[in-house]
Amino acid sequence: MSADPEVQDGETPLRADARRNRDQIIAAARAIFAAQGPDVPMEEVAREAGVGVGTLYRRFPDREALIRAVARDNFSRMLTQARDAVAEESTAWDALVRLLRQSRELELSAQLAMHSPLAWAVIRDDLTTQQFRDAMFDTLDEVVHAAQAEGSLRRDVDTGDVTILISLLLRRMRNSSGKDTQLASERALGIMLDGLRAPSGSSLPGRPFTRADLDSRRVD
Image (cartoon, rainbow, N blue to C red):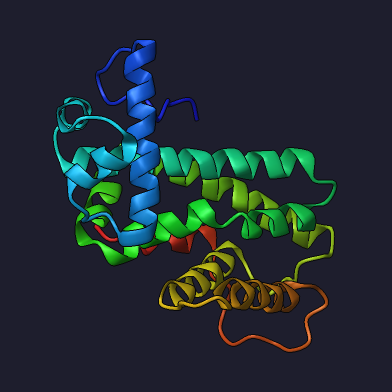
């Protein structure tokens, strides 16, 4: 996967000052989208980024363009984290645990997709975002099957099951608040990981959800 999330379709690489402004805007949008959702006023994003509204609109002519850039940046980060985990961890199980614990980018992606019809439409229709998404899930699929081969992950689950579990966790924590939210999230993740560990203590109903099931459940 070689697409650059910082270069929009048909654009040439930016000058240093233009790239700096663009990076500031995307960073501000990431933070605001994570806290408030992607429907915040564009002026608020510009103010958080420390740039003028005109500068923001020169780089991103509408909300859809900004959401698209944030999604590309986010999925690119997720893919990098996934590949780093595979390269740096000594076992597939450790790589899987690291991937699931690095949930900041995953949480933002889930929030964009689940809580904003506009954001979901932008993500769904953007080829570059989908390429990053597919590459990330391909990596997760490899980690899941490698963990099963080494005997650390129960064999009656698959990549779709792991993805659904973390999505349910993120959805639940998105609706929670208070000082114990982080601790509750960490405990829930610990329980989830314990349930994924081999050997399994009980059988599961039905069949495992696979990588192919993730694709078939896309909204067209």
